[in-house]
Image 1 (cartoon, rainbow, N blue to C red):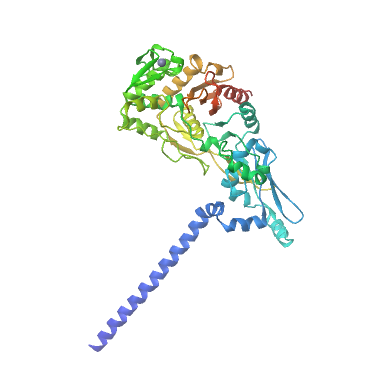
Image 2: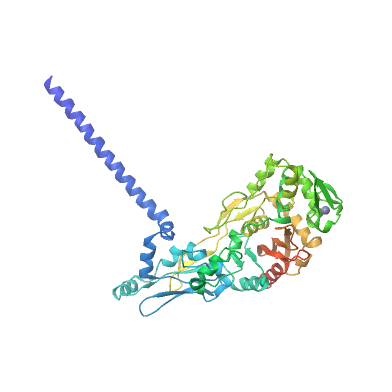
Length: 477
Ligand SMILES: [Zn+2]
């Protein structure tokens, strides 16, 4: 009896012992797992973070690497004096100011997003060891971008003194070739001019207008309305009539210059950018479905992009929206706000038969000898629409160039597709923002583009000439 009691106690003690052992073992394995996970997936984010001290520890031992354009132009580099003090130099000055970014009072652009790659070094281990012994810094890896320096220069020259944004990307890969924002800042003198630039509220110079600028889409939004209409049973052959204006809820809306477009099908309404037709189409839509179509095109959503800083586009029409606001929204006014980056992604998906490739700027990093260290492959983001829907939008956008508001883009070198837009930002002002969203192809390669020129002359499509120059350059060879 006594022995049995003793045995039981021993058994229960053994069990306790095993529970404790296994608990510690489980905790230990969890910890190991977390460390592996952290090293594999989180460490680069952690190092990239501006708040991390390890980043400054790395920069104490590593010379920050160069940032290069795809065609080999040095966009950012570091010089080192005899005391191993580094100075960041931007040989192309303001030309790439927003996309390359800055490295002062925090970081922006590629200086932020490629921070980890620039502070990593894949120099020969022996050399690294020698440098360390001599108390010298090792050379960080270079980052080679997808940017085309010549195309960026064309955009820069054409935009002159306007506040503007130009973004161009390859629809088949998502590679961004041009990302221009004006007004600019010179990253070489940012430190001296910081106070002036930050306090100059009127120009918002530090903002990258391609990724952060939020604008009314103007008539470029007719792309979204057209897709919603086609999805809800509308047809390219449906007939419409325009007398130049229409009254809704006591408000009168006009077509551009009060032009009466007469009777037409959807193709012509799109090519001529008829506000009355698109407003009327909008009022006839199931508004919750309209909302869903906008969200399918990435409105109100995070964008699948390689960049960490950008703004979401917003679309707020649903079954509660008043009909006059629905009418305006359908042709591109109302509350809708978009970024040029997002509009270029919609154009790219249409060009690529509905499939959006993830836009990216970093192609690869390489060590001092030019050996590739980390390569970023093109990545399929998602399908924004069916192939059939994309083909219908392609047909509508082609009509704009052959017989609509974009005839200046007719060329023997390529076939262009697109939609122009004029976005009012102040009804009392003569000027309006000029938009172009579209793409071109020569059967072999394609280029999607979004351009906005702020406060442009209302009577001419100021966004078109830069699109033409970029297409002419890209398809020249
Ligand atoms: Zn009209």
